[in-house]
Image (cartoon, rainbow, N blue to C red):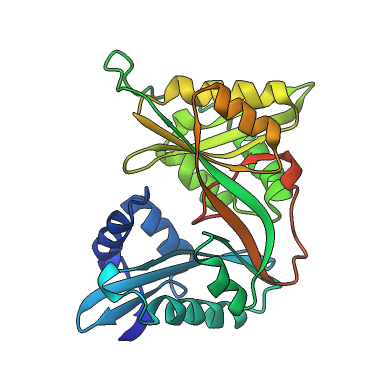
Length: 284
């Protein structure tokens, strides 16, 4: 095995690994990782075959994110995942950020703890499945291009909620699916926002932020009105019981747990009490 920096030529290999894992990312997501961290995404090779991946993204000078830890099933339990993680951590440590974060599965949590990660809070994946509705084609053009100030306001509030500026990432998501971007103003202030992604098999809601239950419901209804896919996904914070109840009332079912973890000092935790659902485990 050897480790090297990932390039755009490795995207098909990354797609093969994520499909083996049953994940929802697209080639556009891999390009987002490479665009924002061209020296910080890595692959593990055996000969010329890519058998593992890991990605990183740094958010300002505050903290970084590790995602897409994938290993070909044929090469698991041979230390490839650990080697990829250690390479990513070494790269990020050289950036001298206060913390590195990730979202772990319960199975991966013991490994991350050995590498110095600690738990921050728990997240639950919620999934909604419905028969395809041929009479409801995907809508486009819902977002008013005359409202760039609202998108900028979403990015500003997201910086407070997430804990760091990720406007470049959010704007990239918006450009791909503007019909899934919603912002709600109340009394002249942003009361909530939601973005979404058209994944390989599901539409993914997130980030989904609301300052009150009524706004949370309006945002979820707007997302479901636009999504015509058979499957929708949201990664909801367990502490936000009202959001979980809302998802359940709209036909979502709990799928699996995730644990948000950090390594270093968690100096920029954001405001998770306002967050109904995260962007996704690969992005934070």
